[in-house]
Structure formats: C-alpha cells, structure tokens
Image (cartoon, rainbow, N blue to C red):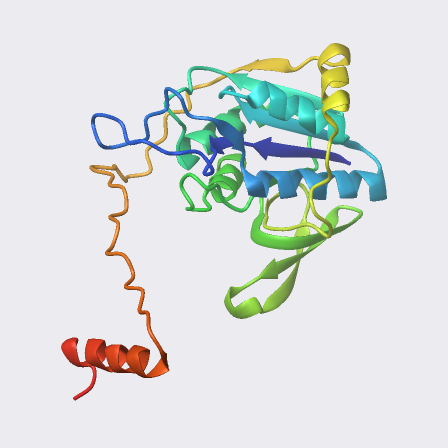
Length: 255
C-alpha cells in the first residue's frame, strides 16, 4: 500500500502575530512556521497503516519556511520518502491553491490512499482534502478518526457534531481528511532528524499552475480589542456581598 500525506506549514500561534501594513494579512517577514497540527495526525495514521499492512509512506509539502525540517522529521518518524513542491509561497497559500498544487504533483505519483489534515490553523475551512479529491476525481471522507484497510476498500470512522460517530466504507484510491489517529503523533529525536538530513534527500517537484480562487478576499484584519480589567473586590464577606449587589443594580440586572 502506498500512502501519501500532504503536509502544510502554518504560522506558529505561540508567537506574537503582527498584521501587515496593508491590514489584510499577517506580516510574514519574521513569522515562525510549524507543521499544521492535523497534518501531524495524518502522518501518524499513515505510519500506523504502514505498520499494519506494509507498503510505503510518502510525505509531500509546499516550499514554505521550515518545510525541509518538517519533511526530514517525517522521515525520522518512519516515512519512506519526502517530496517538496517548489515555488514562491512566502506570502502564504490558500487551501484552494494548496489543493491544486498537491493535485498537480500527485498526478505523477503512485498512491492507494491520500491523507490530509482535516483543516489548518491558518484558514480553518477544511477544504484542502475536499478540493484535492475533486481535482483527482477520487472519493473523499473528512473528519476521520480511524482507518482500517482491507483489500481495495477502507473502513473509516467519521465524527459529527456532538460526538456522534459513523462508519463508511470507501473504495481505494481515496482522499481522507484526518482529525485524529488511534495514538498521538510519535516523537522524533533531534539526533534522528539530523541523521536523516545526512542520509536522505528531499525530492524537489516543479509546481504547476496553482492559482485557484476561493471567491473570498480578505479586506481587513484586526487584532482583538482588549476589554476593561476585572474589578478586584476586597473586604470581608458582607462588604464583598454589598459591592456585588451594587454592581448588579448599576447594570440593571437586579432591582
């Protein structure tokens, strides 16, 4: 079984994010990027399938900052090959463009199953897997929390709102949007990642025309406005109770 995992880099939300001068995007000059969390789960699911059924796992990513390190980390975790779609993506890539780029690269690759993260922290629209399946003419299931393969079919567990679960049988090849795997993404020691950098090579892929409009244009971005600080009420129980009642009356919540 040949499993391909599509991986994206997204801004690290731990870092302080700044808006650019135009006010319609992040200032990406000094952004730190990390692998999209759900793509990590997709890679783990692929590795579990490889351990259960044999075959290969190929990690493929877009040429964004830190992507080389992410792909070498995937190799250190157990992926057999890593490929990078080359191009100028420094200003970020929408889910629609990413799907088209992945589709162009995958047309020349063998695969039985394609896994993506269910969504990315950058756009949260969950469309990469859906659009990728559309471009490739493949069946697709998203919000997947478990995958079992038997022959040319896969049984997948899909989660709905409220925790309701369902099972689908899908013919392979197919595209699955992974939300979670049976176990948390495995850890790759730094020493092993460095070893992969010496032993393995990342194959560069030429990017086809990835221009794809989502029909949505960001006109303006704003930072959340800070609210007023909480009032700290001091004193004994009677004084605190009296002040609480007073505040409720001031706001018209009690008479």
